[in-house]
Image (cartoon, rainbow, N blue to C red; front, side, top):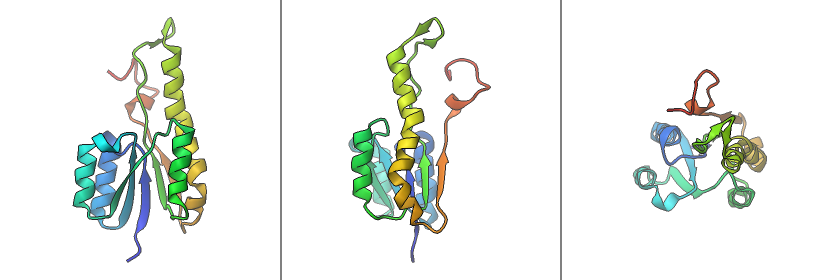
Length: 152
C-alpha cells in the first residue's frame, strides 16, 4: 500500500505532537516529524517507536536557513503530500510599545514568519511530485488578532 506523506514542523509537543499522533495512528500516512532537539523529545521518540517505521523524526530548526537547507537535502526526491508549518515560538516577555526586546522580537518574526516560507521554498519540488499537494500554516492562540496581551 502506498501511503501519503505528511511533514510536520514543531512535532515534539502541543499541536504538532497531536497532529503527529493523529496522522501516524490513522494508518493512511507516513509522518516526517521535525523538531529542534529530537534527542530530548521523549514523547515523540516513544510514539515513533510505537508506530514501527511510519513516523520518522528529523532534526530541523526553521529559524536557520542552514538547518532547512540540510534538511531539504536529506529529503532528496521524496514526495511530500502535505506540509504542515506548525513550528513557532511565543517570543520574549518584553513585547510592548514602550518596552520592546528587539532581538527577541526579530527572532520571533524569523521563526514564525520566515520559517514557514523557508519550508515552502525548501520542499516545493517534493510537494510538486504529489498528485494533490497541500501546504498548511497554523498558529496557536498567539496568532490571534482578538486576544489581548501575550497569551497568558
